[in-house]
Length: 288
Ligand code: C2E
Ligand code: MG
Ligand code: MG
Ligand code: MG
Image (tube, rainbow, N blue to C red; front, side, top):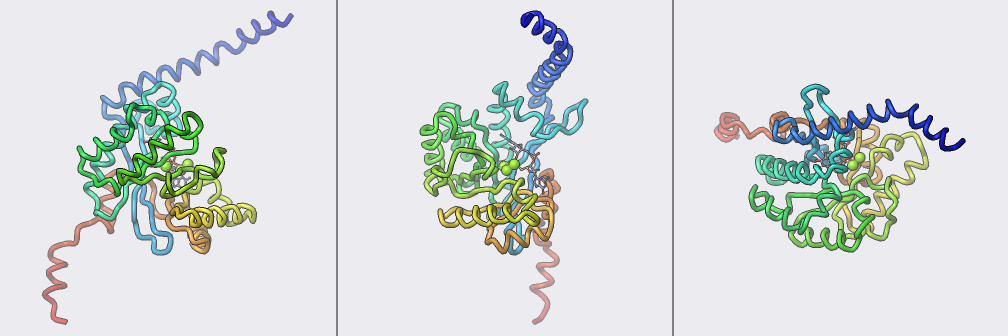
């Protein structure tokens, strides 16, 4: 009968389910220790002006150097951090670490930080951000918070009020992974957002699939009509960069320019090296 069947199924699946649950529990426990053990690191991926390739910003991306499993991608542990609520402590740590690092970059470089919906559930999230800015000394206009449409699923009015509040502080807000969610277009207004980031899924096919080309160029035009800046994610080839340039896309991020790198590596990029004194002197001293 049915009951017997489900009991049998249960028995049949139990070992593998157990293993999966065990692995997740172990990873959750490890994640709890990871912050205290300094296993979490923030890497930075340049965001460039499409036309010139000049770096105008960086996105902070979390990395976990697990003592046994090696370098783990956020795709593996961010969902776990969200389910366990650890994302609030981790996310706030990323925000503070990245804001402090941004102060060591040139003043015209903007910092983008991914913020989980769970972080927005903190009491007075805009005040949490304001305190981090005050502590680190980063001017609000240099910080851009990246949120996804999933932020707007629950408690929409409160979340939108939060975004408006942050923007009144001078902080920028960008809608990440645009085109993959299903919240509709009604929130896509300059009152709440400064930028949209076109998801990598579009860029992957933008050269070869006519419909994706039409969608991508339309998203750029839509963003511009609404007074928003448009960023393309996952630009890996010059051909992809060129095609989004013809669409008028403002900014690009992807392996063509750079992967996410540790702060030391970022600071050693030619654009961020301080002008050498002897070179500056030579230029000045040399007769014209
Ligand atoms: P995201 O915010 O959309 O970040 C962009 C992701 O695309 C990053 O993956 C980046 O390394 C990757 N990427 C950039 N350019 C290219 C490219 O040219 N080709 C390919 N194949 N990939 C590219 P990453 O670092 O693995 O992060 C994955 C996601 O994890 C992020 O997607 C974001 O949603 C989440 N995440 C990362 N750090 C944090 C964090 O501090 N807090 C929160 N809440 N989420 C984070
Ligand atoms: Mg992002
Ligand atoms: Mg994205
Ligand atoms: Mg993405």
